Length: 136
Image (tube, rainbow, N blue to C red; front, top):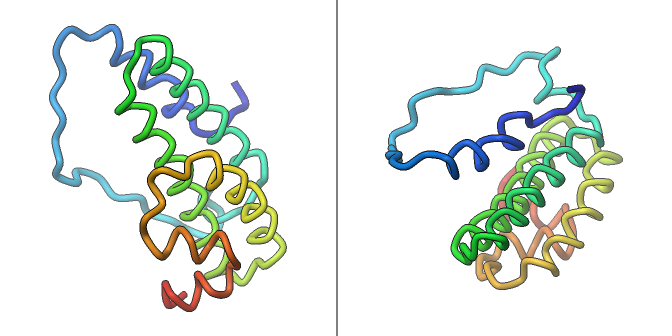
């Protein structure tokens, strides 16, 4: 209650109880964003809730010994932070970008194994370098 990313908090617990499930690669839905949506309005609580949800997922994967799930979830943390930074750069909300970049740097170092791509490294160094690379 009162948390963002409620689906991220529960889906891994639900899937763990399933005997059979199917993964579909096709994109079947799209987000429609408007100026009043959660996605458009920056709140640090949204970032914190996302990280808490992913940490819970990592804890579950650690408990059941799913190393691949841990690696994927660590990448999801960093991709989520990059997405938030992208949105804030587009809105020219530099104070939000700097807040999220500080969090991103902690997770970049914690999740180092998957950062072979330039975009991840550029954002670690400075958001302006990342924005130039991503053409934001």
